[in-house]
Amino acid sequence: MKVGFIGLGAMGAPMARHLHAKGLLTAVGNRTQSKADELAAELGVRAARSTDNFADCDVVALCVSLDHDVLTTVEGLANVLRAGTVVVDHSTVSVETARRAAAMLATHDIAFIDAPVSGGVEGARNGKLSVMLGADEAALDKARPVLEAYAARITHMGGIGAGQATKAINQVLVAGINEAVCEGLALGEKLGLDPDKLLPTLMAGAANSWFLEKRGATMMRDEFTPGFKCVHMLKDLRIVQGIAASAGIRTTAIDQAAADYAELVERGQGEADTSALITLKREKPSQG
Figure 1 (cartoon, rainbow, N blue to C red):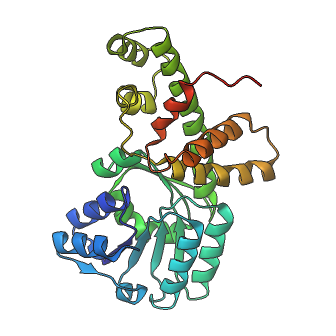
Figure 2: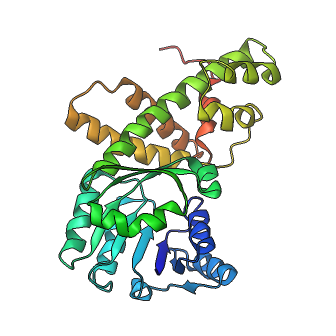
């Protein structure tokens, strides 16, 4: 099997490395060409300069930032990949974008899987991501060796769009947990509690979470190296707001998180880790 990987950011680069370790990786591509050139040289694979360079691949995986990036990349791949190839999209985009990408490829008899991931940079580096996907069984069977290279859990949620719908739910929970953890730890600081005692105490009980474990100590030291960037969380939450509005649910937690991350981006902290949210929670609320 020959596999291409497009999108070599904090998540994509380690995922591509896992594919190389399994002997599957043939070509890598990235919007910033130097990143593709460097990783290709490191791993001894092809550095793609256009979608044409993925023409011999059996599976091409994407992990890019925006809906537009997915659609543009898929459009290019549709014109060069062979019939029977599978495109796996690990980006977080709207359900509608996933369906448009699938339809674009289907006219060329190329399968599409919407397969967003959760687990953060740590999960990508350790090959322990949770993959939630929408696809038909035949496409999943073909792509499974690719997914197994970096996933601890692969869950087939349904047809095209089901993966992105599941990721939307994931982001609601993640954003809500971020709000609570940052607010709670900011309160702990104001009350003068020792973080070296507070954090392990919280993690030993019902308040524990991935975010508390992975980001609690660093945020209390004002270390906000991503991780998952605030600007990306804001992008995801705006997608979620659209999905939730269509579904017709109350969106108190989603809207608060979106407002907070928008404020962080406006303050120039878009490239910081989402745990930079604690900097807002430390502030005294303005008097209306």
